[in-house]
Length: 410
Image (cartoon, rainbow, N blue to C red):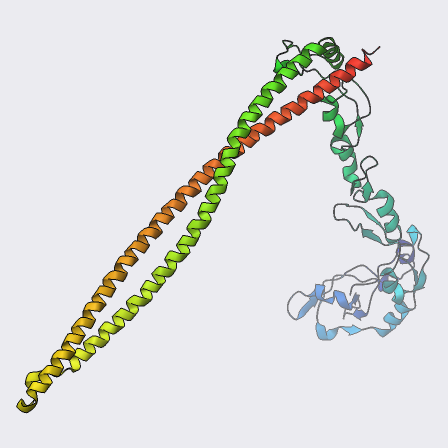
């Protein structure tokens, strides 16, 4: 290791010969060169000029490693030195033998350490770290006084100026103060808001009111109060028209719903038929395997039959009759096999045709089902839109009625 680093006040009282010529600190485990200069053992490697040659920093004299020796007397003199903490100028009052200095510095509360937060570049005394994290650190966690959201202290100002939805601001239209930023859109809403500066046309203009001029809140209320009866008649007419349209669409929707239910039942029936056809096809396949096996067995029997001409003359007549009977039986059996193959082949063709037909039916049903569902969705959306319009107009009428009952503001 390098030498002992002391405070300036202690360094003044240390003899110059106890100072390492390499690190310029007080010698630690001192070694003496042939030229009578001292170095810390840990600093020796810095003196190498080649693999085996060392050069003294003080006089450039070269020497071998074998020429260096530890100086016990100097080491004992240094170890008897009493020193203060390196940070005594910051308030540390530690004082002890120099050999205990390193152990003290490892726990000294007056050592400067970096803040635990990477984005905070501050260095603080170890004894003040807790205070720094609580009161000074730019990355300490704080809570917004308006919305209670937690964030680093460095972000708090920008959050309050731009983002905090609970921060009170002044409306730029009516200059009303203390409007919460998150409520500003609601404040400006022409139907539900209370902003005098927010302009909008008469809410009944879409129903037939001829007023198209944008008005402030007080002007709209006066307009609605003055023409309340006329607006009500427009709304009644709209409701009747809307009722007729809703009835028309409901009448269109009901058959579609019934058609969708019928198609669902048809799809279930088709699925069952497909299962049955699949079973028949599987059974036909098994029968064809059996027919093929029987045909192979008949062929083997034919190959083992003995021709009547090849037997002795005395047995010819009896063998001839037996051979003929066996041959007729085999021919009859082969004929039945051919009929069975033809019959099942025809059934298999019919089954395949039925499957293809049912698959085509399913594809058509799926397409028709999607078309009906899309039509149903459009009709339901129209009904929902009409209902929303009706609710909006009811709200407008209710607001107009309350305004009429209260009378104009003074």
